Image (tube, rainbow, N blue to C red; front, side, top):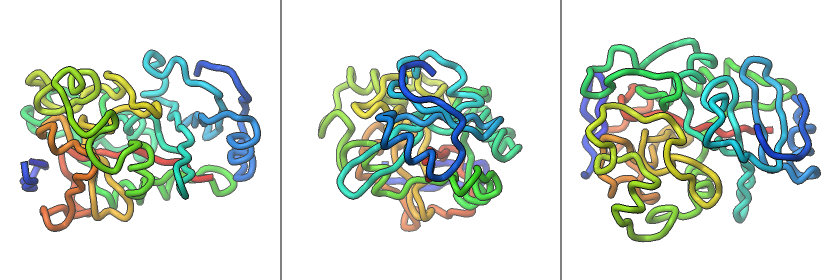
Length: 260
């Protein structure tokens, strides 16, 4: 179940490297750097609102800055989709920089034992996220946004099952997912990127916190509090399960996309 501080939402129980770098904020420079310089990563400094471009992100798992003042995005090209998707779910530290609020404060200890800056932000409602992102503009038209369902699936690499295939062993789940079966009795999301990335270098697509999809009618990916079966890519709870885009839910966070 997805739970919030005030409601229960039933679910039928998902800068190292070489390459060009710089502070290009311009709409054209962001797109041009990614396409022309063969630098599939864009790293946004939330403090200065400038970008650096990377051919690799070799320190993704170890660099604490990617959970703090930097957001790393990877260019995902699949079919008609061409989008910069955040390597990690939005952290509590990053949300505070963008919006200044701490919506997870006040959740019961059974839902969040202790908040931490590198944990996934949670208890977010879609409308508040969209409003906050619109109020955090980048130069020359670049902007932060939430992924569409198609963009989320492109980052996941599959439209059904899990990133690694159609079935899940306990070993696979323990390596890649923060779900009820692997969360070891802890309350609340884990630090983002604690486990292995998928084949496209994206972390926590299955479990940890549910992720809002644009236009706010679905969430994807499962959470630490839900069964691993609900973290399958095709499971997308929405209004029929009681989801309301204006209501914060303790198990829902966000993964951002960067639009040039």
